[in-house]
Each structure stands twice: as structure tokens, then as C-alpha cells.
Length: 221
Image 1 (cartoon, helix red, strand yellow):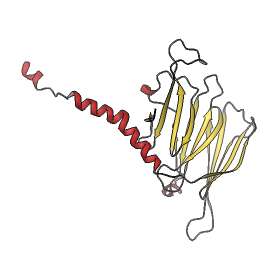
Image 2 (cartoon, helix red, strand yellow):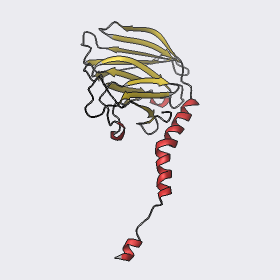
Image 3 (cartoon, helix red, strand yellow):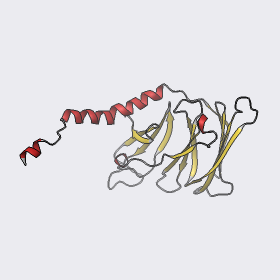
């Protein structure tokens, strides 16, 4: 019995501390530093219409055109939106490549953010949708189109969910913005007993890890 106990694997406390530092500090910091070395093409606003009844935007990002618009005659609180992506003609061709897709929305489109996390020259489009309820939750849908993905029409990713250990005290009212080449999400922290409109525990900031596809603590906070 004593021999079995002695043979159990023992991990030094110092090793556990190094692992925690790596997960909590070094990894997010590395992501942040990598983002500083990337430079997405500038997003030029061609038209942007948001009169409170319907959202429609047209951007030119590098050589690619993006059009995002809510469905016609739909309520702002729910419905659909379309994303159209127009790429320049391929080498030795004259016809442009157009990709058009439709997706559901739970709320109204607040803004669209463009980043090129892999540096291939074609930005991803992040559609930021604000719920109409008192929580003002964000729905975040990202469309990524690479050079290899032109024929397959790229991929959708849902960035809405926050890992459980980072969502403690979260009840909405979050904001999302592009800072340098990072997606940064910030929200107020509510304690038990706090009203929806009066959080008392400060704010939490997260950055999107494009490689591992999840939110991480912002190492700058």
C-alpha cells in the first residue's frame, strides 16, 4: 500500500506554476505580439446605410468587395442578412468571382469588421449583430475566404460563445472592436444582486485567438 502511494506521479509545484503562467500570460501575449506584425488591407467604405430600419454596407478591402445587408421588409429584431463577396478576375481571366450567401440574424447588424489574420491578402468579415432585448447580447459571425477557398465559398465561424471560466458575471452589454490586427471583446462584470444596468465588478477584456478559435484573456489588462 505504501509502495503504491510512493510510485504515484508527483508534479513539482514549480512546474504547475510555469504551466499556469504559460496559459494565462505568455500564450495571450504571443498572440498579441503576432498581431502587431500583420497588416490587413484598409477597408474603404463605399456606401453605408443604417437609418434604423435596415442595414446595408458596401466596402472595398484591398481588391475584394464586400456587401452586407439585412433582408428587405424584415423586422430589425430578427430575420436574415446576405453577404456578397466579389473577387477580382483570376490570372488570364476577365470574369470576376462573386460569392453570395444568406444567414440568420438574432438582432440588428451593428457593424462589420475586417481582418486578415493569416496574412494571405484576403480579409475575413466579422458580422456584429446586437440583440434587441435588454441584455444587448452580441452575435458574432465570421466569414473567412482564402485563395484556396474561392471555389468552396469559404467558411462561416460562430464567435459568439465565451468559455465558461471567462463568462462568469457576463449578462450581455458587450462591445467588439478591431484594435490593430486583433478582435477585442469587452463586457461589464455583474455580481449576484447587481441589476442589469448597474454592474459592480469592473470589466473584462478578451481577444480572439484565430489559431485555436476561442476567446482568451486580454494580456494587456
